[in-house]
Each structure stands twice: as C-alpha cells, then as structure tokens.
Amino acid sequence: MEERLQKILAAAGICSRRQAERLIVAGRVKVDGRVVTELGTKVDPNRQTIHFDDKPLHRPEPAYYLLNKPRGYVTTMNDPQGRPIVTSLLKGIKERVFPVGRLDIDTEGALLLTNDGDLTQRILHPSNEIERTYEATVVGQPSRQKLAELADGIVLEGRKTWPAKLRVLKKNSAATTIEVVIHEGRKRQVRLMFAAIGHPVRELRRIAYGKLFLAELPVGKFRKLSAADLKKIFK
Ligand code: URA
Image: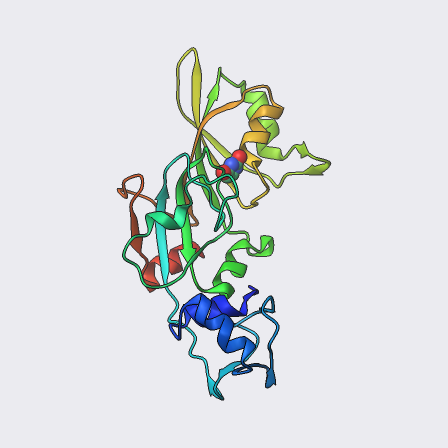
C-alpha cells in the first residue's frame, strides 16, 4: 500500500511527522536510491527501498489485531465529518495499523487491522475467496425462495454476486436473523442483498474472517493475533 513518505518515516520511529517533512526537504531521504525532496511523494514500503542518511529504514514488525468494532465508528483513517475512527480504539499499541477492508459505520463486528500490506492484499483479493461470516437481522420473514435467490447470486449494481451460504438462526413475526457467508467485499453488499429481496437489514454484525471468529471478544475491545490465528483466516 502506498503512503506518504513522511508518514512512513514517522511510523518507523525515526521522528515525528513534522520533523520528517524537514528531513525530506533537506534531502536526507532516498527512495529507490534517489533523493526525494517532494513532500507529497507516495511510496510503497513493501516494494520500494527507503534510506535515511544512507541507512536503510527498518520495516516495522508486522502486527495483526482483531477488533470488535462498535457501531458509530468509521473504518477510514480520518473522517472529514469528525466521526470516531476505529484506530482510536486500539489504545496502547505501538504499531500504526490499518483496517483490512471496510465495515459500514452502522455495522458491528470483526475488523482486522494490520501494518502488513501484503496480508491485506491477500485477504482482500477475491481470487483467494476468504469467507466473511455475518449475522444479519432483517425486517420480516424472507421466504425460502427469496433466500435461495440470494444463495444463488443476484444482480447488484449490474453485476451478479457470487453464491452465498445462508442459514436462518432465529425468527419472530417482525424480524429474522440469518447467518450469511460470502467471499466478496462489495460496498454495503449484505445490506444491498437483503434490500433487493424486500427485507432490509436492521442490524448487521460480522462474526468471522475465514475460521477466525470474534468469539468472546466484547464490542469495542481488540486482541493481538498469533500466527495460529492468522492461519484460520486462510482455512
Ligand atoms: N456488508 C454490508 O452491507 N455492510 C458491511 O459493513 C459489510 C458487509
């Protein structure tokens, strides 16, 4: 993932963002062997080399966290409307991490955050077919036939969705809670799918990436992931 050079320098612990700007302007930073003095320069630290005073920049240790995102938080790194951002919940961690993909502001649940751009790409790339499991509470009681339509795939914004797995978890006369497993990450996909069959989503929660489940993690809390946890994502 490309980032502004001054951010990368700051993240490597060399200096503050402001100081980094001065170091760049002073010609002390090289990218792929060439001095860069342009402040806006975007660099991909996973693919390009960065030197500061001719010493290679150390890449930060990869770190992986699972957050149970509360409703009301945005998954962007800053929000022009000043709404709370998910990374503000990761108190006390020293790495600068980014959300893997997105969750709507009104969606709760499992959100991975990492500084590992390669892992992010592997998870997000549709060819890897990483399953995401959601629990959607929808208005009314969708018929079997309508659920079968969603399972087969429906056309959303001109493109058919990949087959989904659906399972009714509970229902009453007003609402039905359905487990939905999909391996695409189209914007507002689950909400759009149920809206398309006339049963809008009232509540949405992501409970897993692959076989990595939120389990007992309370809303608003996070935990560091181990290598074994990461393997579960790709199972
Ligand atoms: N589908 C949605 O509609 N919203 C999300 O946040 C995630 C999946």
